[in-house]
Length: 144
Image (tube, rainbow, N blue to C red; front, side, top):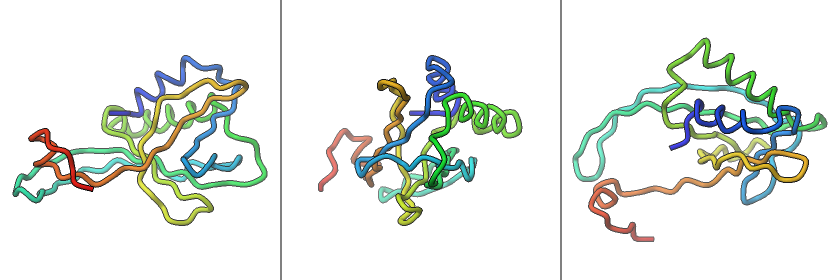
């Protein structure tokens, strides 16, 4: 489970001056992207087996930009740190990213750990798939 505190820790191991690039399987998020929102939410749900549960989560929404260079690791870390000082409840809950290329088709995505690649730091964003929680708990594979 990726959290904002875990992401900040991973980014502290990187050069703060390097550009931070997010990428999906469709390609990189354009330079000039913008953090539009960091959100904390509490949810309750019931699954197909009638089991109820409650959880908290954080969402980082990114808006694709244009023209400007990629945000630096240091600037991104500063924004997240400042956000955590105002909303500490964001720190240790499961983190997902909301993003859609060309700012269309907003999707909920998972994050990989930051990776130093040449003259930049890259965070991969992956698609999240639906799961049957009772089957997952029982160790069964979801039918595709």
